[in-house]
Image (cartoon, rainbow, N blue to C red):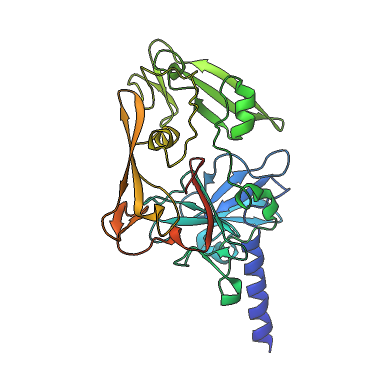
Length: 330
């Protein structure tokens, strides 16, 4: 009887530890973002900014002493977010909330993506269809204490309009992340500039800077560099915004939103868009795209980036919506 009580107590403690994922700890105003990453919280007690990694072989633990990194050998069972924000074994997706997920696109890193499960379904990193029913024994990988803080992932997809860089403080308040960010894509002007965002006394502040001489700002390295970044255009002014919505039905506008060369999925409909993919490329300083359809009855797999016979998990009926870089997949 004593063994059973201790076992149940241990299960409760483990469940409690996992449940504190993405919950700000008032002691040091931090939260556990993943198994071995921490994240800062803003003045509204919400997680924000880029996650920070614990030292090698350390895990994130949230407790009475605040959020701290502890040696994995002694604190493995107490670690929070044990599989949250972690890409699955196929590098297809990662659970980011009780019923939300993000694409990994064949990498072990979350991409700028937001996916939602169908009503009543929860995200599980080991589920081949991404989302499953608790009634069938599928438990959520990420059990947040209050998913209302992630309301943007459980309702309508986020807007496709990027925050304007004309006002650096407003821009920083929108991105809510400390660091340096590119101002625009005009090779003659804004490609030489960057915005430095910082959180000061709970408020976001921004300042625009210009790289010295003829150097360009590189978003990839967050440094001023001699080589012009591939995102910079010599033919299109950064002050001219497109009037075409960046949807997958317009490959060029879609790729302008992606701003990265490669192959990307079109949608989640198993009978139509799941057979298609878009190839994005930079041509004469302007982003262009071409849409292709897999031959026969093959589907496009966003992880392996090839056409395959198996229906991708992103095309499951358990998935309600999916966006990539702010573009809603059809």
